Length: 208
Figure 1 (cartoon, one colour):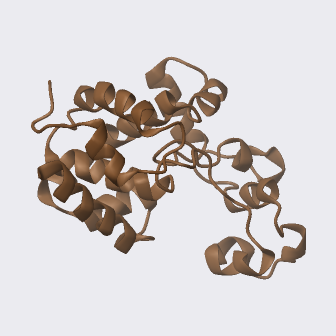
Figure 2 (cartoon, one colour; figure 1 turned 120 degrees about the horizontal axis):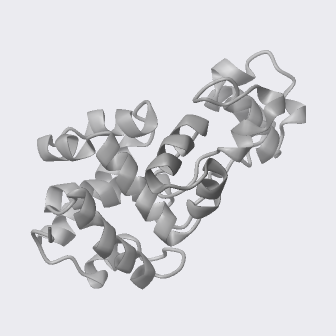
């Protein structure tokens, strides 16, 4: 399968100009991987690049930034940091991850360290033991190996494409259902305006 439009490094560079590792690295990986997962139309590629650009800060962050001030935690995760002495978590990414992601997504309790071990990584910010384990099974590696792989350009693209396909996000892209797509990725609609901004820009560039 090949792209239904002219997908070039120059076009990609207009959307992620400050990407880590350089635009050419990402172009090489996307050019190889996207067609494998049937992400080939303007609508599908624009949606993929828009969502992953938002999640990764313009392809600059392949690991979740959890360096939050204590007074922000209750606003970000009210369910997990309400009525808690946040001083122990202030600017402590590992402690924050272990509390915020405890006892869900297949993770153990706060003391297990799973929250930090399986924090968001890759272009789609894959999070939680269960997601890591499913991707690892698909890629025929261990969940521990997946954690390292996700922070490489190839692993970041590979995992995002796998997540995209596994969650049938091409169907959402075809229907133009950006809200539904964002909920599948994020669990809500955080950053929706920025995601749509990236998408409109990508459609213009790829379709032009």
